[in-house]
Image (cartoon, rainbow, N blue to C red; front, side, top):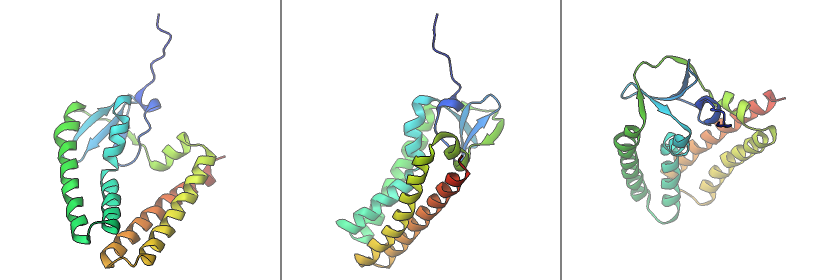
Length: 179
């Protein structure tokens, strides 16, 4: 007899956000809006899917770091665009092909980032992340100013600062809603 109880994917997978849903059977599904298909996510897909969900942000950070250190603005933009195309092709042509396709998706609800934070993170961790995101928002702009970045990098740094402010506010809301 097996003593291991089977958990539903909804209980064990720590994915949330746009295009991640649970259906009425409590399965976690990634819905691709381009192909209009749902893909069933299991625990073993979690880490790789987390990367692919954040692929554009990760590549943008890398491009900014390259432009600020050893590449020119034009070279970093070109490298970023090429990397985005390659990662997107890999995601669509290889990774999604390995997932089980769900044809009749009956969405119960989307797992919002705020709900995910409230259910899966501790109060101390949320408070620390809130402070870190706000610090990131300030320091990225301060770094761009002190390093005298050109206008393009200044705009990118401002955009990243807005992202940091958004996530800081999201974690602040979650922090004050926690008991």
